[in-house]
Image 1 (tube, rainbow, N blue to C red):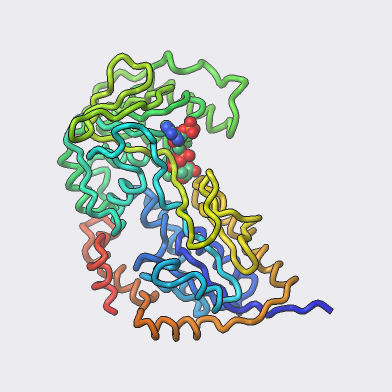
Image 2 (tube, helix red, strand yellow):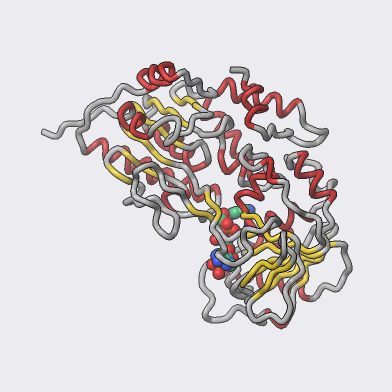
Length: 428
Ligand code: NAP
């Protein structure tokens, strides 16, 4: 007869959409499970707080659903605990029946060209983290003092950055753009933003709603060279052809514009950056085969992310995935989200994918025997023994209340962006 383990204790590492959709999928099927969600930062919601653009409040509304999840007494939040550092993964594997690593992709891919280390050159993880109040990047203080800014990459992150850099304060009134970034962007001297793609308009990976937004900004004129655009979608086009078709229409619309606005947003296709030039800071970007470099004082690479290795687990593959089979890394150890599939897809992509990881986990435990683990009580004892105290959900709510109280009129919050301020507001 098959031995069936009663699965009870699950640890999820990472409180972003991938981790919390996994918790949701598990608890819906097995309401008696006890799930502890671990987070390195004192605040939950990962990419929904630090990745989604501050003016996309509709997308951030998903956090209300996650809030309801933490209303379930069987799901705990344990923030300000770095699994793999302060808290070894081995401890979680000893104490919980299953561990799910939903740790995202936290490293900027590098361009790998000369000049990348110059002041004025930033990866999108750091740059977006800076304006979104990620405590690791608050001190970035990016140089935004020259009229030209290059954003390398033509995905939605590049589009987000272009929009955030060029919206007026009035257009940002209901956003949760951090005050330090808002001040710096308002004071910036930006006149020309170059959105640089190494391939053509059909291959660009931004989606149509995001591209359309760029055409509606008060002080931005999108600049597109009609000669770069085919009249219609070529036979060879691949991917979501509806999006490609709509993108092409929008780009034709932009190419036909001739209005004058304070900021020009240049779509630069078929252009591979070869070097960032400058003596002691970025001053220009050399594009392969171009006669003259683009005069830019800021270069932001938005070319995707990678996953750092996790302890002694096998290194991530070239696409940034922790090696896994349908979400399983090893018996009792799983992964979800960008750490599982690489850095692509929107927040809803994680919902369906998390459900499939949860289904696999539950099926594995229905089929295999494993010794029962002690769960949260043992973990709490371990934390006590080390003198560690997690930011629990009530403490996060105190942080949130402080942020709401500090919000300027019309804005949802003023994020606390320093480690010390976050910990102080948690009142532990
Ligand atoms: P992405 O969509 O993969 O775009 C990356 C861009 O960087 C592509 O244009 C890519 O060009 C380019 N690139 C990569 N390596 C390069 C190199 N060495 N030199 C020059 N260009 C290079 O990634 P992302 O913009 O970081 O977005 C990540 C995911 O989050 C995407 O699925 C995106 O849709 C999603 N997201 C969604 C939203 C939204 O829904 N509003 C907002 C932000 C992000 P190639 O195609 O030639 O490789």
